[in-house]
Structures are given as C-alpha cells and as structure tokens.
Amino acid sequence: MIDFRYFLVSMTGVFLALAVGVALGAGPFRGDLDQELRSDLRQVGREKDDLRGRISQLQQVDRYRDTFAKDLAPNLVRGQLTGQDVVLVALPGADTAVVKDVEGIVAAAGGGVTGTVQVRPKWADPSERQFLEDLAGRLATGRVAPATAAGSAYEQAGSVLARALVTDDDGAPGRGDAATATVVGAFGEGGLVDAPASLARASFAVVVAPPATAGASPRVRDAVVNEAAMADTPANAAWVALARSLDDAGQGVVMAGETSAAEGEQGVLASLREDSRASADVSSVDVADLPSGQVAIVWALVEQRRGGAGHYGAVGTTDGALPKAPEGSGA
Image (tube, rainbow, N blue to C red; front, side, top):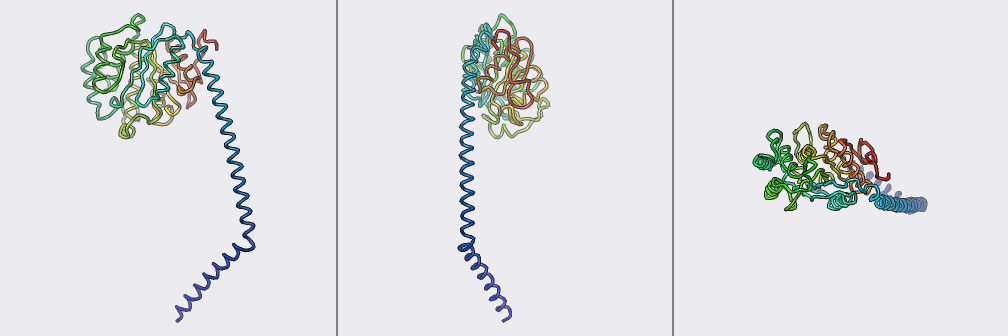
C-alpha cells in the first residue's frame, strides 16, 4: 500500500503541475508572450526586407561594374596581341562561356586563335596513367617531342601535346605541322583530347581551368599522390604538368579560371600557384569570368611575351588585380 500511495501522490503532483502550466499559459502571461512573439516576428520581417534591399542594390552595382568593364575592355586590349597566335586548352569541366569570352578578348586584342583543344577526364584518370604513358612514349620520336623520355607520365604526355600545339619559333606560328596532326589525331583516338582536324601551332597558350572539383570523378578528386612533390589530386598534378610543358615549348602560358579554381586543395589555379617551378614561369588569372579578368589575361600574355610572369585576381596572395598596363593600352 505504501508503494501505491507514493504512486498516487506522484501522479497527482504531475497533473497538478500540468494544470498550473495550462492555466498560466491561457491566463495572465498569454497576452505578454503573444505580444513578444509577434514583435519578434515583425522585427525579423523588417530585417529580412532590409537584407533583400541591400542584396538587390549590390546586384545592381555588380551589373553596373561588369557592364562598365565590358565596355572598356576592347579599348584596353586593342592591338596588344596583333600578329600573335594563341591556342586555347580547355581542361575537363571548364566553363564554355569562359572559353568563348577568352576567344573574344584575344580577337579584340588583335590576336588569332588557332583553335580550342578540349582535354578529356581520361587524361588524368589514375587507371589510365599507363595507357597515357605508353601512347606518349610511342609518339615521342623525332622532332615531335625528343625530350620526353624522363619524367612522369603526365610530364611526358604534356610535352608531346605541347610540342604539337605551340612553338617558340617566331616563323612557325600559324603554319601547319605534320607532327601536330599526328599527335592530335592519336590523342583524339585515345579519348584524351578533342581538337580541330586542322590545327596550326601557336606562340602562346591560355589554359582554361574548371571551377574546383568540376569535371572530375570522385575517384580522381579523392585520390592523393605525391608526384612532383605535390600532395594534390592526380588531376591537378596532370594539369600543372601540362601548363609547364606548354610554357617550355612555346613563348608563354596563362592559366585562367573562376575564383573557386584558386581556392583550397581542389583548385587547379591553387595547385599551380603552390608549385614553385610552375608559378615562376606560368601566369594565372582567377577572375576569368569577369571582363576585368579577361583584360588581365591579355595583359598577362603581353607580360609573358616580354619574359615575365605573374598571378592576378582576387583570391589568395597575388601580384595584384592586373599586370602592369602595357604601352598603348590606354590605361
């Protein structure tokens, strides 16, 4: 009986507490609580409307800035690449709009685009590395790429492709080359690149990088290698090696992409800038999706032609927003 009485007393206390809570909630404190909640909701609504207004204003300012820069861009680059040929190398996942914008700004600067080479994900797939190395070895004969025996598979393949796309011979750009057709055709049949059937060699290259992690399978993104002292994804190691090879074979290279490409371990531009060998010779621009970034690409190509290199944009430690304005740029 003692246990049963204890149970009854306990249950009575619980129900009494619930009754008091209900009475208070429906009684003297109800109005105050409701009023306070309504006030808080009104305040949140006002703050939300204020934020919407500020966002709209910032978007309008951004549109004005981009329109202003886009209108000025042709005047800032006019004549800077006259007589120069440029090949565009689009990495897997590169934004097609950025590729077209780069084509347009090169044309506005008076340069010629020999073509756009689209690199396929298979190039950087770890399971295809042996295939890549074997194919590069077979192609690395004679005048195609005589100096590719040493180095990683990516360095060998990059050297072969680079010698087919660019040249440092002032008299050779814009002219066809038998080796170019052979190399591009072989890499194309191997599912490694897509390129125009008739492709002349250029003096310069612009490598268009993808946003971070774009265009790569989880296996490629997540695998880690220490190749060339780079604790990075195999894809980034491959793209940095390709950029270095293009610079070795030609007269200059600029790697360009959006800001995310310069952030974190997955960004291709971030990997380029962290590689001491590549960053000393290959320039980079991390705002290639903006008109100001496209101007920076042209000015960086001019800087490359004069033997310099730099890293420009909005992310991390850079050499500024733009290279030094070339003579005749109107800046």
